[in-house]
Length: 78
Image 1 (spheres, helix red, strand yellow):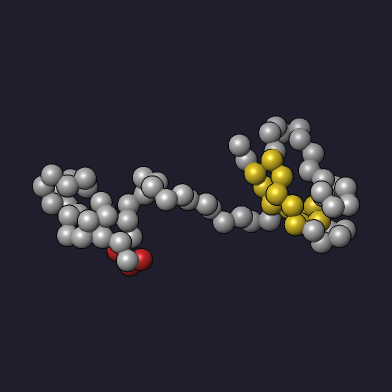
Image 2 (cartoon, one colour):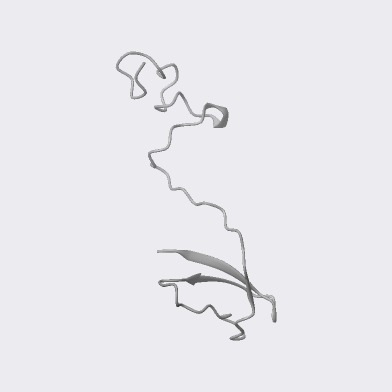
């Protein structure tokens, strides 16, 4: 379900709003204004996701084990 962040142009409040359909109308939770600007949100990933480990961030190879990336039988294949 898409959750969007909006900044109210009237009172300046930041709101996270769940938008279920194309016809949903966003309004400020603080003042009720519909004069909002959609903000760019950062992508959220959770631990245990299927994304490969990033060695430059202290992880191992693409499987999370140092030296395994590309070796026969590794999760990356090689």
